[in-house]
Image 1 (cartoon, protein in one colour):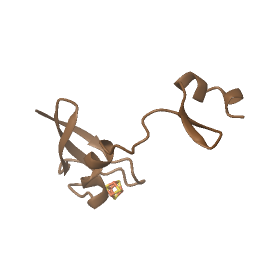
Image 2 (cartoon, rainbow, N blue to C red):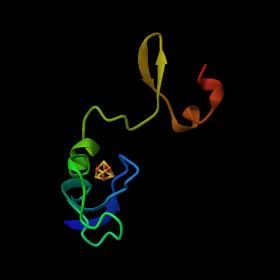
Image 3 (tube, helix red, strand yellow):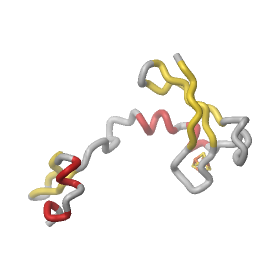
Image 4 (tube, rainbow, N blue to C red):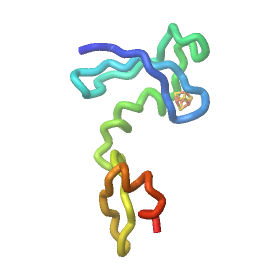
Length: 85
Ligand code: SF4
């Protein structure tokens, strides 16, 4: 297990977080008391960011809607506007 300093990206406050990981799995999220701006504050959304990160419905790759269905596409396709049409 290790704890990494990071910040919440949900809103513009960017509160500091201490995230504890077991391998790549987030097992705890706590407000970072040493963060110079948020100083140990994080709202409930930031504290729950580990659940959001591991949510099975999270979109982790580009998707394109084809015939009413979402299809996975590559990152290079997603970055090429001719595939958007
Ligand atoms: S912890 Fe809450 S207030 Fe802080 S950046 Fe995240 S969403 Fe915004």
